[in-house]
Image 1 (tube, rainbow, N blue to C red):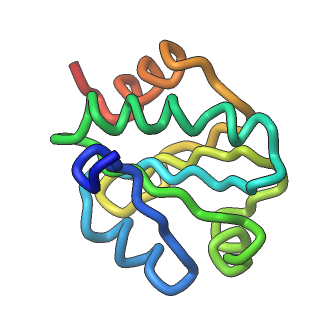
Image 2 (cartoon, one colour):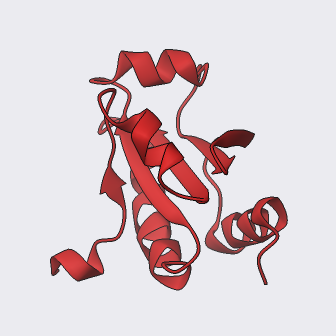
Length: 113
């Protein structure tokens, strides 16, 4: 897979604020390698990042190594998907989602067609 094909960026405690501020529409996936539902979501995030590459920026935060971001978003369970519009947290969804459900949630939150 080339760098172009991999549109979901790794985000950390050091750059999450900048990542959110730099993009109008952001979805952050807070996950861990040992979390089965988190691993299930990986290909869905990759697919949606391709479909929405011109309008939504996707990032992944490993909860094991980024405690500050987890605290900032009040993450209690994973996977957690946090949606931001113009730097403001719009919604947080806990648990895995199917691709169609995830797509509809993004369209609703970000008012996309």
